[in-house]
Length: 211
Image (cartoon, rainbow, N blue to C red; front, side, top):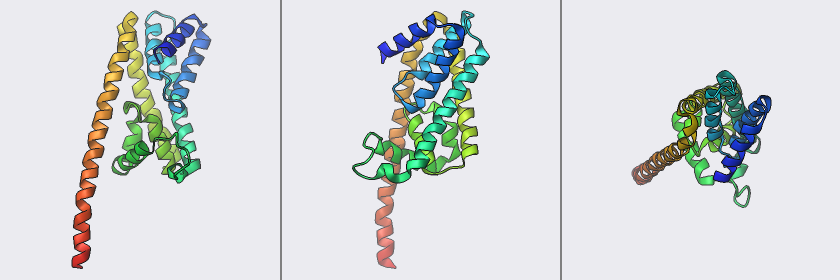
């Protein structure tokens, strides 16, 4: 992953301005469809390039937002198309079934709030968009919330890249730690929810016996 980021940054640094913008758009889109791509760090580097006067702040934020929103809706379309087939054994083994089940529970609880927060939930973005599509949530409302989420997150990253300047690479460690923190919170939430379900089952069984 580090080598990929280094290669992308070196390539982006050598590109003419137009193609640098095109790369930002492409990476912001691809990150949602192919999660290992370090899209956030490319946006941070874009902020650094804004700071040295090579790129325009508004253009970087706008293109990152558009790419992120379209990428989200691409995964939404895939989820809407293939639906619950992804949970059928022997099919689509590359999809994280456990995370899909986790996101489905979060979606029941938070609804569009989860879509609005998706960009801040590192490691679950693609799964959220896929699961939202599987749930066939309204397209235009989903697009609006996904776009707003992408805008706030990318604007924050560009601002950070702008102010840290040549030290933009240090953000990678903070983003990684942030990702682990969010993952930990989600694991705790999932464990708590599972415990509640297990406690409810004996109660329901006893209620049925009494009735």
